[in-house]
Length: 382
Image 1: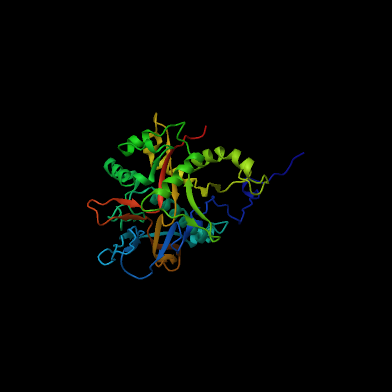
Image 2 (image 1 turned 90 degrees about the vertical axis):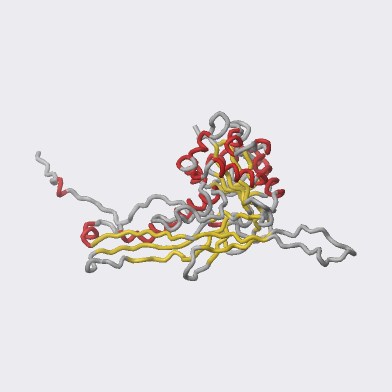
């Protein structure tokens, strides 16, 4: 019996109209971004035309001695204040096609341009926030400002910092940089301090949270905790997946014994933030990508050339994100008689670690204002 088979070109081909997009994670810092002084990441809006800098005024608490019967004249306390400058730069991106290519398209690929550009912007800002958390404070404009790709991250990028700059950062921030689980791990310079981070004793565990909290509470100037709408105060710690996993394992017994055992709320069964000792710990997986691909010196920085990864322990006003131009859709002008079309986005902003300088001191220190940086042994799983 002869069966009739369709020739290859006659075989049915099903083309789905619905597109499948690569997964893009939401910006995990968004919950802690806000316009008010209580925010960990402080958004500052200045939509006026002109200028590439914004001044951020900072003041510290009064520390003068109280007077009783003595005169206050000539005993007044000067307010310690500083104007921190942050720079903004442009970020633009676009997609284009023409009628000929669109005619061939079985699905409306170009129709996805708006959500794709939105995802691109989320990823860009998330990565620049991570870079800013790790950057060294600087009063100079960021390298690359106004270049072809621009530079929105203020300060000295960690991967570009010299040994001298890293050592100065460590010295200036002795009371708010922690190497492992012992204050004594902080040595004469940054590299040696990282080398004291032990692969066994200096993992990110619950003891690390307690130490970071003590450091934040005793640092000068003080680091204010983040306040929820309920009035409760918390510090917030951002950690990569490996450090987060180590902490979650260390808290497993506590979560089992001290928290409700229902599936919906216990972190033993559910993914999400951890809470311990008044600290919210949020996992940001992309921090690990930075260690692997950008801050590559950390891959062998620990004791015995072990891998080290940072955590960012934050109170109020850890970072600033000044905006000069909010994200705005753009469209191609040169269309070749309406044959080519393109859509894009443009925005102008900066991301800066907030820092304070005591202008009354000679060679004054640049101190990160609202956060503690911790370095912990963080081996790749497996």
